[in-house]
Length: 333
Image (tube, rainbow, N blue to C red; front, side):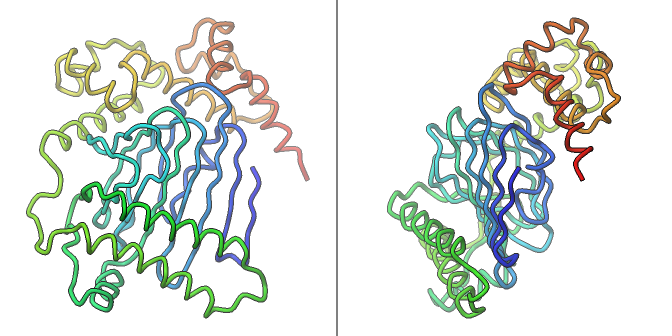
């Protein structure tokens, strides 16, 4: 993992190989648990720009993950996918590339992109800062959701406008150095915030809506969170679809459909991939004296050879390589 910092206002992190701990804080002041879903060479480039009172985070991922977390209590989150071959799944809904999402304070988010490269961006900004900019640029406040979240209608011209301003801000910030003035930084921030507000003004209704998310997607998102809680409580236990179905309160066929929509796989594969991800987390955190056999056994993997092969297929290295890499990091001066 390499980190490039330009005066602490701009940061870039390059990650080779899946590292859930390194990805945990990719959105400022949040914790998004992330799980690798398909095998291959995982690479990520994460960039952050901090302005006066608000921030922009952008991530480029080479492989799909399942990410779960929540945004802060004092900021609204403006999120958009700038690259995704197919619509991504977010809180029970399909979201096309380029559609801006608005999340109220403290709103939870579960998200999974389609296979292939994925680029996401999130601006965290206080509600009153957005409204002040809207009054200045458009002469009115915006009907931002007071709770939950809202997705703007698809508008290709607005999406292209926003994407170009995000790209410009990232390029400008990457070139900052010790000679960069606070006025220059503020100018980039003003340009970027203005672009987000312009897209919001074009796509949000003029009055608040009572409900921001349809009932069925909300229910699906709630069921997924129940499934994740079940997984946390039974990570090393024997797994059966019927037990999970009873725990989250839906029939097996419905659960199969919900899982394939949310995770891109059925419940059995979901459980298996989740355990492999947990094994990687434990291996990366283990001391040099730890044994792969013990960690695999604690998660219910009884056949070490099969576990090692499946682990390598997902993460591109053997469990022993992961453990040895952790040991080398611990020994470094």
